[in-house]
Length: 162
Image (cartoon, rainbow, N blue to C red):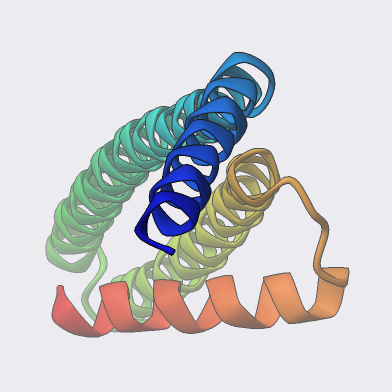
């Protein structure tokens, strides 16, 4: 009876080792390849996300620099209009004051319109750039209104921080 059990045990061990060798030869390498491919794909996705983030930060810095430039131009134009108004007011007492006030209001309104126009253009460029970068990272496309809504919310938060 002990001999039968030992034969069965040896047979089971040999069968197990044969199955293990077959799995190693035919299943282990493909499984490792699948895992390595997945690891590489994830690493590539992280790299793409990092590149997109860098691009977004560069666009944000450019956007902020242009806003500062617009504000400096606005301050300069306001200052120029104020100086012109002062010159006119000293030359012509009542009429000069009225003209200076009108010119200052026009300049301020024009500056405000230009600033709003430039901000709207910059916002549209940033929105489009972020949509493009996000689509590259995610590799799927959200609907355009959802993208724009999300980015408009982000830009509003950025303006709130400033």
